Structure formats: structure tokens, C-alpha cells
Amino acid sequence: MYKVGICGHFGIGYDFADGQTTKTKAVYKALVNSLGEENVAVLDTYGWRKDPVRMINRCRKLLGECENVIMMPAQRGVRVFPAVFNVLNKSFGRKLHYIVIGGWLADELKASAFLMRPIKKLDRVYVEAEKMRDDLHALGVTNAVYMPNFRVKNILQPSELVYSSSEPYRVCTFSRVLKEKGIEDAIEAVRYVNSHFGRTVCTLDIFGMIEPEYGERFEELQQGFEPFISYKGIVANDRSTDELKSCFAVLFPTYYEGEGMAGTIIDAFAAGVPVIATDWHYNSAIIRHLTDGIIYDRTKQGLLGKILLEMSQSPQKLNSLKLNCIEQAVHFESGEVCRILLEGLGVSVEREAETV
Image (cartoon, rainbow, N blue to C red):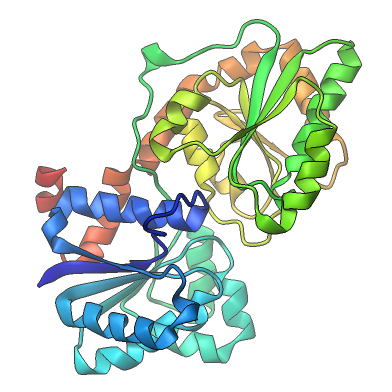
């Protein structure tokens, strides 16, 4: 019997780079590192809506083979999988865990008593920020536990930090390419800086998967890109640190409604790159203002451009934060965070420490 089974969007055979798939794979890898591949089963939910009966049968099989089951549904799947696993589990009595991806669950539960019941019955609900946990506790979801988002990646050593000391200063976005992620705000900020100086002081690289509903709009934007703005495609998770480390800053002007503890920030910190981000949802709980990044008021139009202008005039202000970034990244390293999950699974910390 497997120690744990993971029911989540792996997208096996496909190259998905969204936050849900990335975190699902990170949890799998962290558990394999700790427990061994022979103790971790996988149920890929990709395309489950095409054949829900088959998916229910696979859920039943997973329960029959595993001591613990972890589910990692997105916003639509959460209306199905907790209820299904609770019903099926009456025949098995396994421990059920839900790892929340994003910061939307409390709002969903407020609007749905139907959803609240199966969530409360789970053994543990792991959320990405302490405020998320507190919000859920206030709703009566007392099984909510704080477990930060994390990444399985190498963190730069202090000697490997790359400092930006001359123009042009390379900034980037490193998230899904979607308007609500602030992509257009980042573009306008870089244009503002370069227009102010009358030369290319900053360049912008846009990384990430283009959301289908934003594809046509983004194609229009690309047609108007100046030479200092480029779309650079999707970066594999194991290459993100190398790709980011030469950046002056990562821009994260998000106002995406479901934003949780964004992996973008963790990726940047591991590469020793400060993040300039909106004061949106949980960003200010992760980024320490003027310590490992900058938090700004997104309601003040044009403020991102003004901040970037100031930083390009005084690059030492951002360069001085780089060491703090890699020190902060340690708190989101998979081995550290996975201890919380292993305790919930009933696996001793000592065993995990020996295995990793």
C-alpha cells in the first residue's frame, strides 16, 4: 500500500506551466524525495470532465491503495473532489488532505454552504498564508493549517548573486500572461521610464504561459512592442533560477482575484531578485517592503513606472536587497515546508530529514 496518493492536475504528456500544475508537481517531488517513489501514487485529473464516471472510479482505486489521499483541485474542481472523496471514503476510512492553490477558498465557502460541509470533514486543509488560515478558522473551518507555497529548486549562494550596475536594467514578469496579472501595467511602466530618459534604460522580458482568453489581446500588444520589450515564452521550473538571476527586478503588478501566495515571488527570491509588487491579497505578507522587495499601492495610477524610474536612477537601492531575497527564499524551500505536510500524513520529521 502507498503511504500517500496525490489527486491533482499533472498534465502528464503535456507542458503546462500554470500555478496549479507547478505546485502539484512540486508536492509530488517533495514527497518522493522524502518517502521514496514507491510510496507515492498519482491520479492525474487532466481532462476529468470528459469522463467523470471514470474519474470517480479512479478516485475509489486511489483510496483503496493509499493510507492518505491529497487532493489539489482548482476553483472548479473543489466543488467536486472533496465531496466525492468524502462519500467514497466511508468504505475505506483513509485520511483526506486538501492543499489549496491560491487565495480564493474563504470567499467560495462564504457563498456556498454546500461546499462548506465536505471541506470541514477533511482531516486537514493546507493554505498558503496565515491570514487565509485565520479567515477559514473564522468561518468554522478549524482543520485549516498554514503551509506556505514552496518550490523544489536551488537557491543561489551569496557568491552567485548577480548585481545590475549599468544600463539597460533588465526587468521581467514571471507569471501567467494575463491582463489581471498586471502584464499591461508592466509594459507601460517600462515605456514610461524609457520615454522619460529618451533612451533604453530598462528592458522588459515577459515570461509565462499565455492564457487562451488573453491570446488575441496579447498578440495585438506584441505587434506594438518596442525593441526593449520581448515575450520570452515558458521557462521550465528547473531553469527559473538561472533565467532570473541576471534580472534587476521582477515586476508583479497583479490584481488577479484568486491570487494566493504567488510562486512568482518564491522563484524571484531563489534567484536573488527583488520583487516590485502590488499590495494585493497576500503579497505584503510575503514580501518585506524595502527589505526583499517593494510593495506599492495599485490604486495609484502610474506608480509602478515612478518606482522603476527611481530604482533605475539609484540601482544600489535594489541591489542592496538581493542577499535578503535568498535568505528569505530558504523559508519556502521544499524540505522546510514539507515537514508540515509530513506531520499531517503521520510521517515523523526525523524520517523525512534522513531521506531528503
